[in-house]
Image 1 (cartoon, helix red, strand yellow):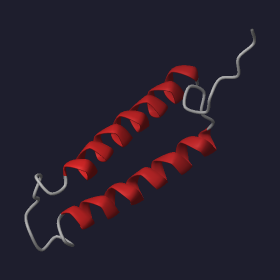
Image 2 (cartoon, rainbow, N blue to C red; image 1 turned 45 degrees about the vertical axis):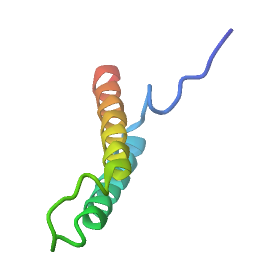
Image 3 (cartoon, rainbow, N blue to C red; image 1 turned 30 degrees about the vertical axis):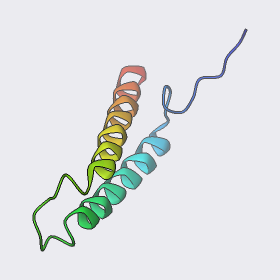
Amino acid sequence: MNQKSSWIENPSRTQLIISLTVYLISLTIMVAVMTDFFQEPLDLKVSVILSILNIFATLTIIKVVRSFYTKH
């Protein structure tokens, strides 16, 4: 069967820029939420779900960037 490759496996330059921008904005917002706008120290017990979400988002972005540079 002929399967289409997803944009994560074969991203264009525009898709890479958009995904990096969205990732950086969302990471900044999540860190701001986890630290109460940088007024309190990071409390990992309260923010376990957000920390896990950040880890998976980071791994996905690494995969996108690696795919872009190996294909182009």
